[in-house]
Each structure stands twice: as C-alpha cells, then as structure tokens.
Amino acid sequence: MGFTAVHADWGRLDASLDDLGCGRAWEDVHRVEGLHLACPECGGRMFARVSSRRARYFYHQERPPQCELANESQEHHLLKLELAMAARAAGFRAELEVSSETGNWRADVLVFDAQSRAFMALEAQLSPMTPEDARMRTDRYRRDGVGVCWVGLQGRPWQRAVPSLRVEYPEERAAGWTVRHGLARYTWTPRTLAGKAGWTHIACPLGDAIRWILQGRVHPHTGAGGTVWWTAAAYVELAVARARLEAEADAAARARAFERARRSGTAHAAAAERRLEEALLQAQERQAEQERLAAFFEHAGIDARVWPAFTQLVRTASGKPVEYGGQSPAHGNGLLVYSRPRPGRAFRLAGVVCPDTQALARWPAELTILVPGQTWLARIQAAARAPLKVAVLDPTTKHCTFLRIRPQPPDPPAPPQPGHSR
Image (cartoon, rainbow, N blue to C red; front, side):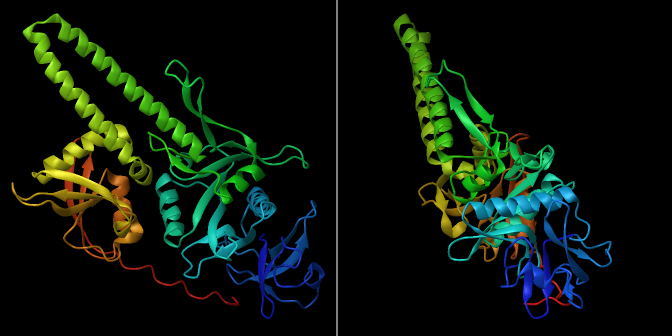
C-alpha cells in the first residue's frame, strides 16, 4: 500500500491531502471504473481504497515482490501518515513518498519551507539497518541540502549514529504517538560542581517533537561518545558551562597545590612551582583552544578529551612545527592546519581536519585531509571526486596511516519509471 499514485493527466496524487495535491476530490479516484493510476515506484496499476480506520490509500492490483511501496507494513504506513500530519500541523507543507530528481533517495515524508524548498526528510525506519548504512543515507540527503530525522519503534544501534527518534505506537486509537528516546535535555541544578549534572532523554508527543525540529528549536548534538540526539542550543551551552567550571576547579586545585609547595621553601618545592606554572599555563591554553574549537568539535563529532592525543599525532606525523587556524567555509568548515618547513620560514597551509564531504569535488591536490578514524575515512572515500591525500590518525591506537584516495565515479542517473509524470 502507499499514499501516492500517478495519473497520466493529473500528475501525482497524495491520498493524505483533501485535494489529492492536484485539485481533485477523493470521489474522482475512489471506485471509479476505467480509471488508470500507476505506482510511482514500480509503475504497476493501483486503485484507491479506504481502510477500516477511514484512512485513504492506494493499493496495487497485483503486488510486485520488489516494490517497496507495495510491501510496506501497516505500522510503517501509519507512521508515515502520522509524520506527515505532524509536519502539516506545525504549519509546513509536507508530501509523502517523494523521490529526489536523481533518484538517489526517496523520502517517506518531505517537508518544504516557506519558499517551497525541501529542507527536512522524515523517515519511518522499521526494517533493519546498520549504523554505516544510516550515516551513508543521511549523507545522501545532506549533499542535496536536506536534513533528515529517522523515526523507529524499537531501540537499534543505528539510532546512536544519526539524528533519530524512537516512538511508541498508541495503544488506543484516539491516543497519539509518543517519543520515548532521541530528545534530551541537560540537567544541572544547582549550578555548582556539588550538583549532579548530565544528559537525560525526555518523553513527549510526537507532534511536539516534529514541530520543534522543523521550527529549528532543537538541533542534532553529538555527545562525547559519538551518540547523536536532538536538543536545544541552551542545553549545549549549559553543558559547556559545566565543563568550563570543572576546568576552573581543576586549575584552582592545582593552584592550591602550587601554593603549598611554594611555602615549603625547599628546592624540590621550587622545582614543583615551575612545573605547576607550566601545567597551569598549558591547561589554560588547552582550555582556551578547546573553547575556540567547540564549534569544530560539534561539526566533526570529535570528543574534546581526545583532541590533545590527536594533535600529538599530527605533529608526529608531520615532523614539523604545526599550528591550527580556524574553520574554513571554503574548505567544508574543516579546521585548517599550517606547518613550517624550516626554522625562520613562514607557516603555510598544509592540510584540513574533517572537511564536509560536499567540499571534496574540487579539492586542492597539495593539501592533506586529516581524519580521526575509519568512520571519517569512509565518508571521504565515498565522496571523493578528485585524487586526495588522506591521513588517518587514530588517537586511541596512536596509529597513523597515509592513503591516496582515488576519485569515485558519480552515481548513474536512475532510469525513468514507466508511467511517471514529471
């Protein structure tokens, strides 16, 4: 079953809309003899029907085994409809079962902004999927400028890898769907180190969660362990404030230890004083650097705690003095890396850390892309459209691997579907 069908003259029909999305009434397609409707996925003949719950949909005359729309489960069907209705209730235009122009993705629900630009896909994902597949499919949407929220009914490993919601099917017909996992708040009360702090997943109606996502009130956030969830910017700021307070407390503790050593008056205390001063300065510099790079850590999904180890690997692999610049929009918001070939020479641009894969089409051949592990390497390999130099620096294993990535051929355009109206 599906919510959409194609008519040779009227174009695309959406059973969830009062005018079917083409200015026609349901009576024009329901139980009309001689009417020819086609599946937008496989081109097979379809008919209009109303379910026992009064839901309108289209069904195949003969169910083709390879057509995804023909073989959707009842739960998948109902969840797609619920997502579309939630988006429309939030004030957005939402269309069901929409494919991209190139055919490289098909959204269960595609949401459009006030300028009629597609900006968010809502995916009812009930079948098995690996985290790698989830990231790859999410990247396909991102390359076309479309965000995505994956919605499932059970806890799955892929939900930790991409922006997602886990929902609960309503037990009663009149009840609404409920989000049980995927939205989180940061709790810290009182705002001292004595108070407990941490991220807590919250439950809410699915309609509220979809409205917050589409209105931009919550955004995907990557935690220290690489898990992704939706949260508000204010909660991220609160978590950063807590981390800053912990760093300040640590610095204060070191200062007190320094004072005790200074008062001892011994040579050992004097040496310890110098070491503590250096440690404080390094801690402050690291704290300042990590605060400066907070936006980059969010972009790259890198845990700030492993950044010093990653930096040491960069310096070891380079064998030269290295400095970090800022994030460069011209280089996919990656972090610029400068090196100095010899003493007395100026630093020059040598590489970029974790650039957005959309920026790789015309990548400068002389630059090295630095990535922290195999996940980023896979993204770079999948997006490469020119020869690339990549350094995989794993801060956990302390291992460095230098690779030459060959360009990947572009995906061939999908053949037109029989009976599809453009």
